[in-house]
Amino acid sequence: MSETTTHLLRSAGFRATPQRQMVLQVLREANGRHLTADDVCRAVQDRYPSFNRSTTYRVLEMLSAIGLVQQTRLGDGVAHFEVVDHPDRHHHLVCVRCGKVQNVPAEVLGEISVRLAERHEFHIGTVDLMIRGECAACRGRAG
Image 1: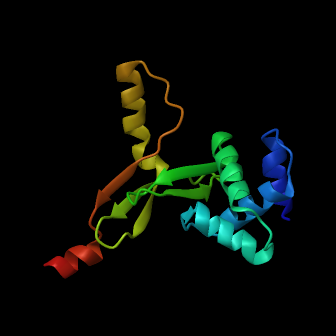
Image 2: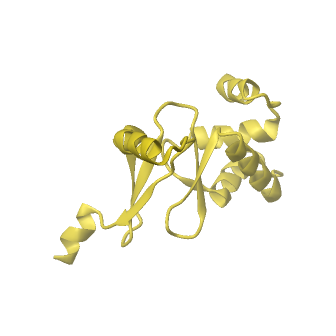
């Protein structure tokens, strides 16, 4: 397992069990793709055939709860997961026609978040924004 996954778990105050490390490693190797729990389970099972589906769900739930993994619903009714061990937090633009997902840097919402927090005297913890619409390619096909 990766030293980085071990460090991430331990720095969050949790034991670096093999199951947790395997799930984190799969998410880290996804290179920006947004994986479903089934995607994660299949990828782990490719390496460790005895890996249990319910373990995948428990580990993803725990990693999401402690903030190492971001869970996002991208409009298809299924939770998608990605690791958030880097400063590149982002939001999502989702095409309703082809399903393409584009990442939008979190700083795009920086100013509006500050204004909302001030206006409503609200402390913002995290922001998870998904905007649905049509990508350029689908708009081009429609015209």
